[in-house]
Length: 199
Image (cartoon, rainbow, N blue to C red; front, side, top):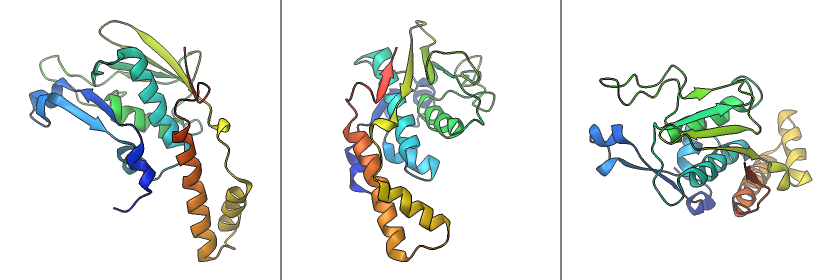
């Protein structure tokens, strides 16, 4: 699979999954997720997918510090409904990384490793998403502000041209390059205090 080289420069997210360890899917239950994994899940790379990845990265760092987050041990609450805007897209990425699901996840073994009832929507949280450890109860609420990294006017003009059916091959190429350039810049600003806020 060919993809933009900056994908490989994005910080990965490493977690411990006791179910993975039990079933022998990964040595010592250690799983590493990359931005490319999120892109494969979503089927595309965009500011929304980047934001979902970054919010999860920042939230897990806040909750676990230098320790390994426990996949399947994190409750996730969204302020918006699952069908509202891009909430569903974000939830898919968050679910992939944390293991949290509504009622569609693994049912568990002997009362353990249940991944259901860890993902919720329409919760009155003071931000976009609230992540909570199920072992300690520690929680953090995160919000994403992609407007801090705007796209160039030419990118949106290119998109309008494509959607109107008036684009040539070079217009499509220019748009794709410009679109991913904004995503690259979002990751370049990963440490900007206003891009992803934690409370």
